Image 1 (tube, rainbow, N blue to C red):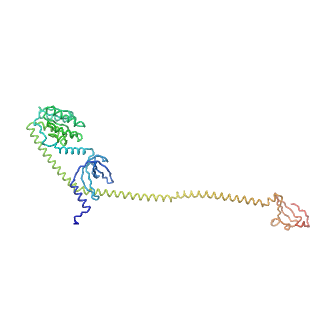
Image 2: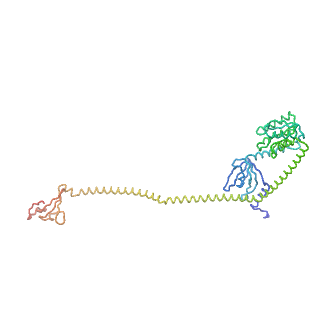
Image 3: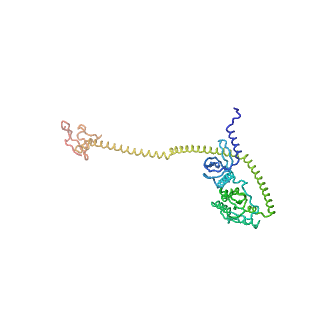
Length: 460
């Protein structure tokens, strides 16, 4: 296989894009909006779908200023734009220029579908149409008697040809009952009245106002009429199914009067001149519009497509940047939360509160320890006091005993008669009070030893 025949993915997508953009430079697509979202770029991305298929669409921010209202999910719209391919993802989508929200696009689509179907049946074939009489003597208008159109028709027709006779069959020309009323009027006129031509007459209005003239059964009743039927509905730019089904279409009710009621050779000449000027004017206008259209198409082919791709790339980059920023912010938030937790743990006030709790616990334990220690000491003191009381000389003194101590020198307790001399002064400690005495005699285990002094001790 020749390697020169191998395409890269970019080359293949670029070829597909060129093919689609050249094949579908401008298209009108009807459908329901779903999955509508607007990223930071301001562009609108959505899916345009019907019951069996869907296509991705994008409406750039620069085109949104022309919208009469913001689009929403569930809206039935008609989008006009061009088909393109976003090469980085290999996806084709509709680049939307305008959006019709109010159902006119849907009605126009229904109109075109009905027109195509009836034309395929041959209902609009020219060989079926009859030419109205060049000088009708009686004309029947099927219209609303309150409308301005009927008065315009009568005024122009009677001015152009005063002997003309005009009858008005009153019907409603707008609303749900209008088509049925006009069908019944055609049946009645064909059945009984003597007239040369029937004119369906109504003034201008929106496509909704003129929708009764797009009724399929009314179109079939027009074709089944034995009398020529002229459609004079709306303005010159308004087209209805009745216009195609009728034997003659008049641009307006007034034009219908001029077409059906001739004036004279001068009038015919003026009509011919007007027709020639009109054709020339329309041809010139069409030529100018064609030139403008070609110029606009050239600009659209050379400028917007690279810009479209750049806008889509910017959108992708903005989404990536948004995700990166969210990830970074989440990581920073986690670090901040962790730092806040550590800071809270190291907060002096927090640590002081912990130390205060610890100090309180230590104080409680200290008080309990002191109380326990004091209680133990008190018990030891009580036991020592009991022992001391048991061996205390005061208890012995209370039973009538006394303690003798020397007065002179070191006050030592006298426990033996050898420690004192006769006539030596001593003190006797009683349970209550003291006595000062002089030793008059000493006595050991063998008895009293005499001395030079008196054997009797005197008290001091």
